[in-house]
Image (cartoon, rainbow, N blue to C red; front, side, top):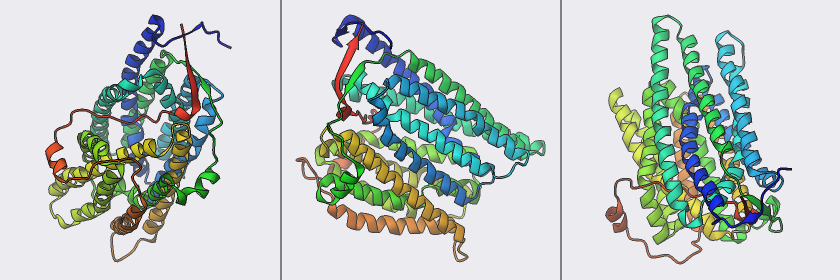
Length: 476
């Protein structure tokens, strides 16, 4: 066992220096990690489509990467009680880095004609996300021990702004690289080979930057924690009491909405790249634009949540989530390809960015309001499981509908329509069971008009696993 020095206060000069250095390292690490994500995870669906994956297979991929992590993450809290959080993070990330080798290899094997590589890719990506789910609770708990509570919003705003900037830039840069390599392939009569080469280059860079990120994490200081276990409650106990408390009904609503959203979720990429024939640059610009508008509206959503309550924000944003598939269906009414691209770049992206920024923020904040800090981690884990199962079932249903290949309508557009109907029904009846759990002001629509301003910062809630931590110990 590694020896540690005498326990001291976090205000001790040596400990304070370690914490400040670690927080600065974490900002750099977040930026590097976002480059890895922007060139890696963001391109799994396009990579599968380039390997001739069917819409059904893309749906299954989407389902797997939402179900497996939600199951695995439930065990993450248990690991924190047995191992160093830093050790969990470093080992989990090391396995993710190693998985890049077989993932890249699937592209080469597909190129030389080895069958069933898409299915192999689905399994590998599922494992990739599962290791990320193991890392997730340990990293957030670790950061929660380093960042003072009164600086948490400001610090993570700065960290996420830096990470978001590099993530967006690299996503677009990756698309430019892919289109450029593909054009070279067209000129040389080998589109498939050069396309696989382009994805291979992206994934190699992603792996290298993740190694860099890993080295920065290794240099960060980790306080030791003592873990409490007496507040544990099982998933079965949670499910049995769902209908009798506000948080339980809230989780049911989230699970149902995740189900109907998941019906269409996997197929936006298929629709843009295969049905509309967009280049990788246009595909990524439209994808990134939704993220940009999400960040633009986030400060407004935070203010609304604080003033009018999370349920009011969820209600407004849920109705906009209902409308999103209709906006995508509206693209079929535009005859000019350029105007279709511009329409998708702005209209669904603005509405979706507003909707999801508020919905995600309000749902995270509601957990803090409705669940005591001692039981919060378990509640979040079970909520994520139900949401993951909902997305898995929704994506599976969407894949089944696409597989039927209806003759009277483009199957993807039919799936978007089904998702719209499902969203409408869930929001219409589901919002009635939600209740605010704190005193808030009466909502005024004029507030949105008055407060709508350009982006001034990005604040992301930290899922600090407070229920686990009885004591944080610092050592020189």
